[in-house]
Image 1 (cartoon, rainbow, N blue to C red):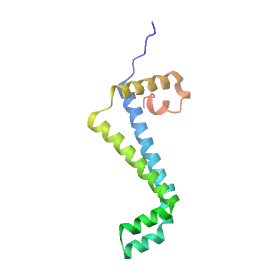
Image 2: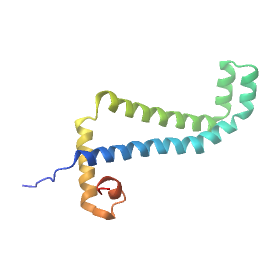
Image 3: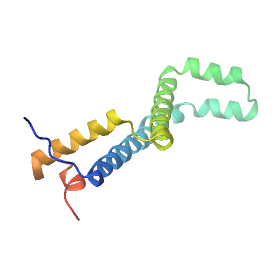
Image 4: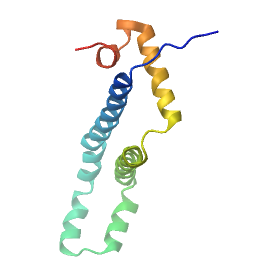
Length: 126
């Protein structure tokens, strides 16, 4: 019979925090790169919106600047996805399936030892 090594819940929480910080880092990098370029390309429309704000002007700007719309949509979509993911865990807790997946990932990191890139942050005691 194959015995499964026990996993410290502290290590699972560390891995979960690393995943969480990684997701927010990706969202931040998206906003700083794609989001800022997309918003910058809409700068002429912003001046129009300041003078005469209507939803038609917003729609016109987004329809005729498709790359900017896609960039802002990507940033908003990723931000919303991470917010919903994190809120679900805050409200209902981590599901047993996801907890099992995190434990398997911790075992895999532990099996690889110090050569795994996450070993230093998940397994090693400071």
